[in-house]
Length: 389
Image 1: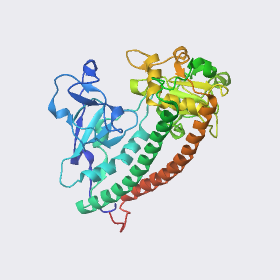
Image 2: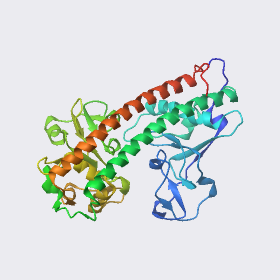
Image 3: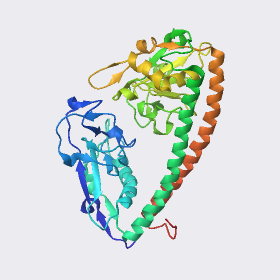
Image 4: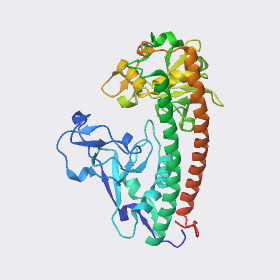
């Protein structure tokens, strides 16, 4: 934006860093939900704080939050009144020269630039000083609101596509329950088998070698949790040939998060249907390889992904002081109601048809994401021209 006034973010915003609340006072119920980094993007928290607190750390719907570790995400809070925990900050305009919606849309590329330039050993950290030092262009308020309006409309299109994908995901669960019933109650009285009898090989935990920038594609817990692995986010690992054979994925493998900080996320799964290059798993992930003469991989993935199937797995797992986990022996000892293989295969055919529809929606969403990124880039260079909001 040539000729446009500029300021540092610190000059025109107020930034409130979260408080280090005592985790011993966290629970499933209490005074108010507590917002941690994992809650920012999804917009709600299932963890509550019990105890006294300073009201200044209270967050409300619409507040803009930034995660200070890992990926430097920003989002508007939508989970109701809650408390701001450490390593999360709230940012708000403190001047009538900066529109809040304009600030909201400006932040992601600026934070991404910092993230890309931040060195790390295990997790990247963001400081408030780095945020304050960001330079922000300040066109007229009218222009700021026009830019925000254009980006709001583009974001609404992306949100609708994501909602359609979520609807298709819930349809998959509905089909599962319709055909097989609740896996815990087992109303159709399917024979109950040990999960180990359904596997071609025992469950395998992945490599402990840390991911770096080169080597074989490695799947970590952050890339697991939907029907398709998020390959675009995977790291890479330099792994010896002998270990590659132990940890590689084959078509039809089901992988789960087997060690993670949230009990609700323990066991989140993905189905590997192949990729254009070799893929391995890391030590926080477990591979299960269904014996296709005993169970269909799509059915088994859907069982683990169902709310009640995941409950069976989570009850079999354990916990340490820092994370919830399940080991290979426990994963091979799940009590699973197993319907006839032919019925599983009929279910798989229906789900794979849904997956084709989901793939079309994902392609459309990717195109909308690219359009949004282009608009966002042009917006803060003053290149949106006469596009109407």
